[in-house]
Length: 179
Image 1 (cartoon, helix red, strand yellow):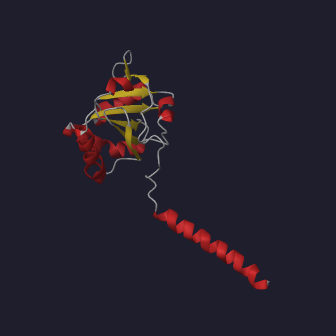
Image 2 (tube, rainbow, N blue to C red):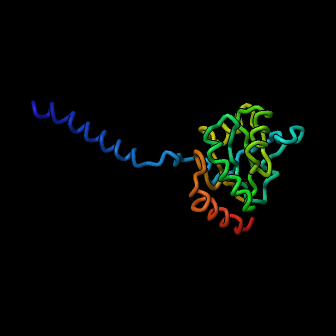
C-alpha cells in the first residue's frame, strides 16, 4: 500500500514530462486553422489608398491571392516587410494587405516610409474581418486559391526561407490549377 502512495505521483510526473517534451517539439507557428480548405470569409472593406472605394472577396475570385494581416504598430510586421517587398517584385501573386486595428494615417505613413508590397491594402479598423479569418495576432498570412478557398495559413512573421520553401511552391501549384 505504501508503494502505491509513492508510485502514483511518479507516474503522474512521468506522464506530464512526456507531454512537455512533445509540446516543446511543436512549432508554435503551426496553429491549425479550421478555415483551411473552406471558402474565405466574405468582406467589404475600404481601400486604404482610396477609402471611398471598397474591396470585396468576390472582387478577387478567379485569381490566387495572398492576404497579409499587418499593422503599423506591429514590430513583427516590420521584420517581415522586406520579404513581402521581395515577393511583390516577383509578381507571382496578388498581395492584399489587411490593415488590422490601425489608423489610416499611420498605415499610409508606414507604407510610404518602408515601401508598399501590396497590390491593394484594405482597412479592418474594428478587427471584425480579422476575427472572421481567425486571426490570433499580427502578422498572419493566408493563401487563397482562384475559387476563393483558403489553402494555407501562416501564423507570425514570414521568415527568409518561407518564401522559397512554402509560399512559392504552393503559389505555383495554385496558379496552374484551373479556376
